[in-house]
Amino acid sequence: MKVLAPDLGEYSAYGSPIIAEVYVSEGNNVTEGSLLCLIMIAKVSVEVKAPSTGKVTKVYIKKGDTVKSGDPLFEIE
Image (cartoon, rainbow, N blue to C red; front, top):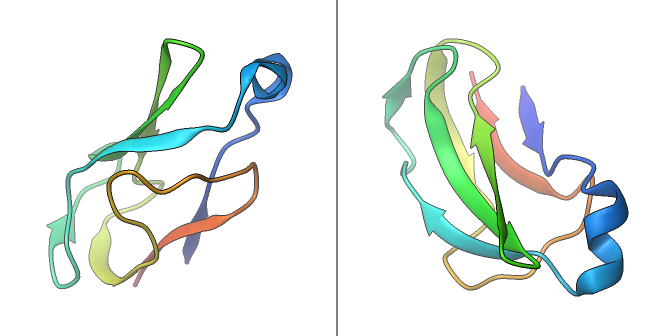
């Protein structure tokens, strides 16, 4: 299952969202609701949480990357 960047709606008008923190690596096991990363935009932080329990098989981002809504962030099996 791919985990995508959430719709950042009105905040997108204030600049590019940046990955502030990445909390998991490939191979990590996560449970539903586990915090995967933090996106910062216009001094607002958006938590991205695991939609299901599984293993992180791919990490597409790193700290400091810019993202837009719908960009792939992780894959979880």
